[in-house]
Image 1 (tube, rainbow, N blue to C red):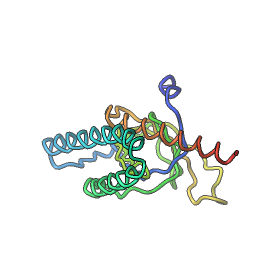
Image 2 (cartoon, rainbow, N blue to C red):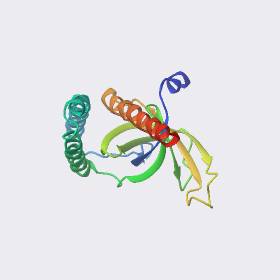
Image 3 (tube, rainbow, N blue to C red):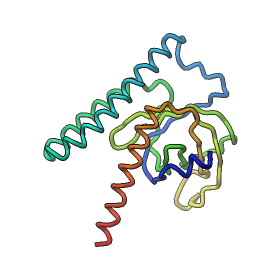
Image 4 (spheres, helix red, strand yellow):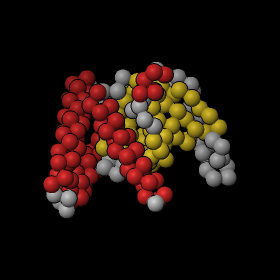
Length: 190
């Protein structure tokens, strides 16, 4: 896993995140058929989202005034999709350190190391869903607690068996956000 970790960029970002333990016998869906249909719909949605991102590169180049409107329309559709897919706990908007292989964020309670989780993240600002099984790789004390944070722990999750379409969306998001953050730093230095 350490070689994989080095292949991906890490960024500080905001994500809406929810998760539940897989160790507690979570049933989630009503039947295997429903779960299979839901997985196929999610895969189709992610595939379309990747195609939209690729097409938007050309739109931005050719029609720079139209691109923001199309981005907003896509965000609105993603919000509607996200509200339809919320079955478990509502996601919480968190500052997070994010890469294609894991995420770290502050949390109020310590989670058991190696605990298996199902994680849903909605990448901001487009509200794109990324879903993966994960395990708790580490829990550290939050150095900002209690002075600047009301959450005592930093939880680090490593993603396990993420579908390639979700991973593609996550990688594109991280690369785009990193580019945006680098441009912002350069502008601030000038």
